[in-house]
Image 1: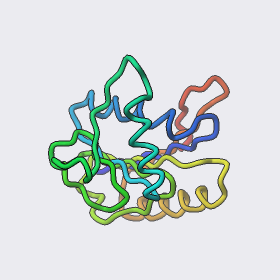
Image 2 (image 1 turned 120 degrees about the horizontal axis):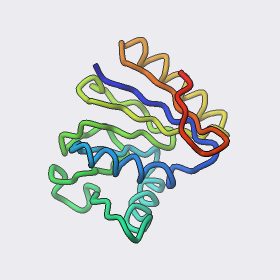
Image 3 (image 1 turned 30 degrees about the vertical axis):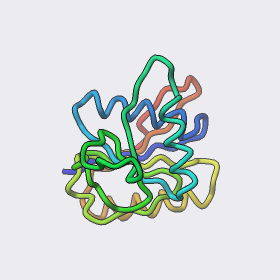
Image 4 (image 1 turned 60 degrees about the vertical axis):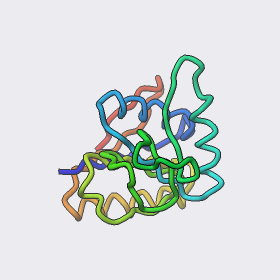
Length: 150
């Protein structure tokens, strides 16, 4: 059964949370796709993943880089999964693509201060739960730890 994890971001930005989650994904031996809501955000995420930590390397690429099937982390704005990823990250209000049931996990990162993003997350929650996905909701506590809320 595909797991759907919802991360309600209030204290951190996508740029803070996404690299950590991607590193954990790769540590499990999984490949990932990151789907952004716009080309501009995709380019910003691409740049950030090269520089987010001097002590860590996060291999990734876009269709412009080529060798899509070989990318451990593939960045896109569309529904494709050319690298056979087990996990898809949706950021910046990216639309749910079809065939999510073929994945191990779907991870939605959304800005908890943006009403439209909250509405999109609620709609995605209802849709994925209705499809039989195992859904969980995570929010940071005052100490910055992720706490499962639902």
